[in-house]
Image (cartoon, rainbow, N blue to C red; front, side, top):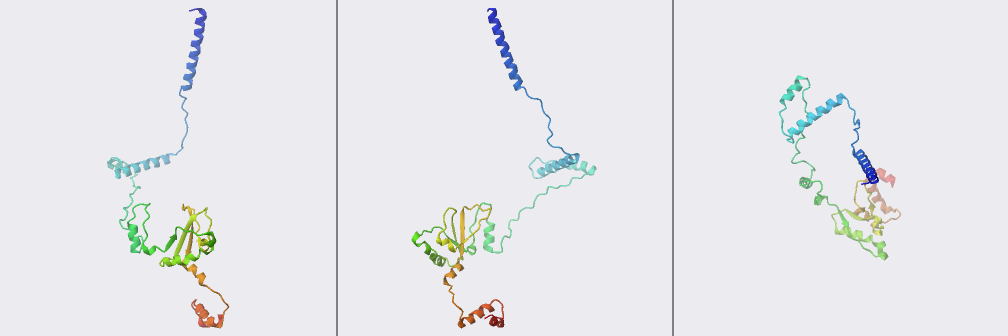
Length: 238
């Protein structure tokens, strides 16, 4: 090997050694830095130790950890004037039968609920509404769609309310002009708009108005007296 080749090889070796040293410096672990996470007092430390002791006893009483004999520890605590006081107390067992309602049907349904996801079927006495789930009407006759309401209630004589739901993006039809829009609550996740109507609202179709005549006075007096007024006061009003 010539002198030039030896010098060249020496330069390459030096360069390799330099790269190895640089790599070793990069992977070398850094010095530990002390950092204060939480500052506490002796008083708080003692309270924390008491809590830990109470927690250990609680887990032992529940058989979550291996039961221990605490008599020796109790004697030491008593001799130091700091007898152990149990603060974690097991809750009483849930009553097997609880009174939810004075109605026997409702009480029976509530007793059969064993989770928070089930929606039980309500008793017949609590059912007071029916719903329209599908309604189609040609545009030319849309203004007369309210005429169906009377016959809908006749099909359900034992129900007082009719409900209709539809998406927010659907325009209101003439059928919904007589309905009341139920305000949505912030906690409600139902995606549709809810409309409600009472069967008594249909009485407006049978109401007629005319000027008062003499023959109307007895009926007017009866109406006034039904509100608690005397007959003399009713006559004065008429």
